[in-house]
Image (cartoon, rainbow, N blue to C red):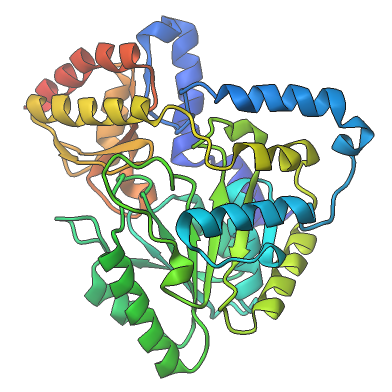
Length: 395
């Protein structure tokens, strides 16, 4: 007998993927130049040339080892290179011995959640709305419950009173994402400090660790003059998940890492649980070619100004039309208030104008849509008349 939960996941794509597939149909019908697919965060800034050059060099000169197995947790030297870079760049105080190379951030999140939850269905994992919809899938796969904290709709920071009230004796972990998908909002140091202080108080109250998982695929895609605060410097029981997909424009290569904080309580045991979770899920030995590429592209990014210019252009022009828009601090998205309460209905109407906008219900809030800022500049500009027509339909 097949697993009914897995059948449901396979038969019902996420709202993002569903729109992405609808976009393919529309492009065949109307031509790709006449369809404005703002659905999926697929980076369009060119991959940095050094990455393609190093891929060729590794493939031509590394011999058979480039295609062989590494350690299950990843090559030791590569993990040490990552630690050295992060310690130098962010004063992170991380250790290569507590780094696990992963098949992208999705694998890193799945492994982390599997490792720090007990498997008891009473376990709870807190997410801050609006949040990446697949968090719910990863949490449920760890046999835990999703607990959603409401945002402050003025700032789209967490509602800290709601956060404090949602933490219970069953809380195993909390996921944060900054810059945020879908809002583009960046959590400044004072926001992170407040969040960590609340968690520390609750750890003492319930007398058990509450793990803070920082999902950081957009770490370098930052449009404002703010220093990125590495969470290991603020909270001991923390885990960092990172992917090179967005920053280096290599989403299809599926390479990233996770880090257990050296100050984490029983860090070696937590890391052992990480390794065990990777084993149980089949996420061992991330692709070796891209493991060995990592030391050559640490800190290397695509042209972030492409995303910044598009994001600010969309923000300014959509605001002129009459939309309310959350001003993004980074990431690949612009969060737009729908002119009606029903975001699903608004998203469906947008399809009639060949605009693919993701409704916010799947992100944990209502009344908004998400648009990516990573289309080409020309395609982004050409979409504006469609946004105007759509707005005028309601106004």
